[in-house]
Image 1 (cartoon, rainbow, N blue to C red):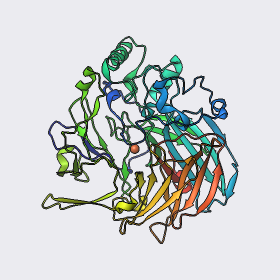
Image 2 (image 1 turned 180 degrees about the horizontal axis):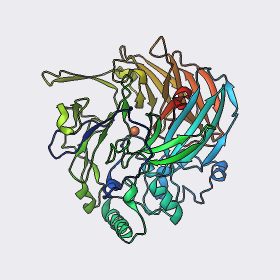
Image 3 (image 1 turned 180 degrees about the vertical axis):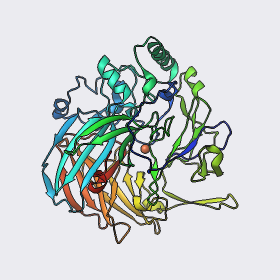
Image 4 (image 1 turned 120 degrees about the vertical axis):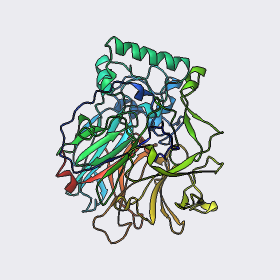
Length: 487
Ligand SMILES: [Fe+2]
């Protein structure tokens, strides 16, 4: 989750709060006069910088309707193996299940990911892929599966043109060729060959269900509203601006206050100001430095001379002036360490210590707590075991009060992603619920959804999926009760 930028009158970091009470809106496309959002970068901690190398099974190609081989060029290296894309899958019902789906698991698990529609014509990074949502619906102890592209403005235009034309924020926009591509894109826009005015984002990173809307988000655009059909399929409604409340891009990791139902998010703009942001666990500063492109570099750079900072933003702030306190982080390592940070709001001093003992340290990513307790004191966190990096070999349930770590391992050559904790409601205990995770077997090239009891980490059920699910980003679970009121 991005932390706050240092307070600066020019820094346009915006704390945005959306109340759920407003009437359900008809989606309006926002006329965005600038295409500067093409340069905005998604969270850098989703997945790998390095290419994964996995054996390509014969069935992999047969599953794909896209006529290209992800191994044929080095430039495609970050979308190889089970990071490579799949075609859309219309909903398939009554999937084979091993074990028993718990009766209380009623609703839809959805997970976002990057899934390039077209073969890249230049450098490509895994983060650049078009957003695809994978959905498993549970109804009467039976399961269905579907996956669909989110019909973003860029996807629709590129599909019509039959090739990629929109700039890719991470893979392409660096060096002289990146500038050339950007200029070419501007020129195409001027001549009406492409239309960036309705957004350029990929909607591939996060998912949130807010105010009866499922929203797919990347950090470079407005969210997209995706509708779950009664049969468990997915349909894109369009860009969503919260009934006119949002006129800029939004981060892909908003948070919902479990008591008020309000959604909190941040916006930032790397063109209007040199705003700097830190992300996730990494303690060092990552800086947007657009002039680096002219010298052949990436616009997002690691600057060892910068010190990363944490900020505390007033809950209802609407701009960066609401940052009440910011303090330096001094850890010199680049390791991912689950840490407790205590802040004294009066003195501005902070302390930091690792939660897990040195002997048990492990690379943890994509963590979450019981969403009914978000923003409150929690005891348990569920995090992906991001080893061997960039793959995820299982997940850990961490007792934040004692540092005790309980691991659930997917098995030999089986990997997953973010573990989604679905809390029972009501529940007696904080960890009363289930963990859902897509798991892919790299030996058999089959994917499945596992449902694990969060209290004892015992596998309750495995849903066998009809097609491969690539490794991806964030997801959520929408209960059947919440779905009754879906917009
Ligand atoms: Fe993320």
